[in-house]
Length: 230
Image (tube, rainbow, N blue to C red; front, side, top):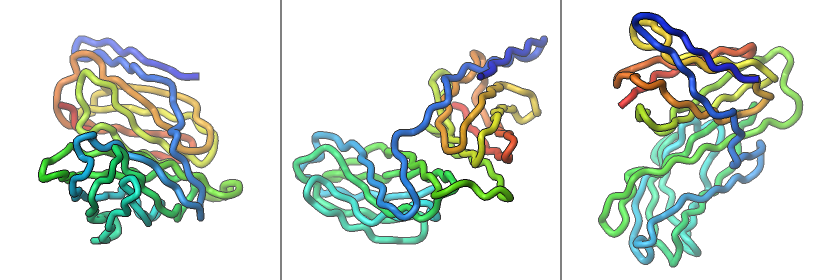
């Protein structure tokens, strides 16, 4: 059961408009290979491609191959979170990226292909979210809650945005957005099963551009992240 809250005062209206929590479709299991695809522009065919592959959590997933059609791209590791990509785009409009799942505990890793240069023309970055399930039951003495996002970042005032939440046991989860004066701007509550979930939110009308703090609280733990609104 989900709860949307409206709080009225002379200074502030708080309104949480949220879609039901959703599970992402790209999931993996510890010790197995996990692949996904990103779209490329049709004009990229036959062109040299250079890009950067970035990971938000390198303990979750390790890239091993990137294919552009039948062409294998060169992956040059710079550090734990950054790889340089070089290849020539085959007759395809998708990039297939594969890697090994390293850690579970219902973890989340975002993979971003950015600084994309195709035929010496820049293209916008693309982000994909990987949700990884652990093997076996959760440990009874370990409890955690994780949150990643928002996506896109920065958040646009009049467009939906999402965060990814991971809990290791069924839990009631509350998301609350505060401004820098500590005033509540948005509140959303829902029950989540064990695992990683996508939650889509929309800012209330009249939300001003600026810096906010999104806090997640649950029976398995808490987390917080800054939010920039444009």
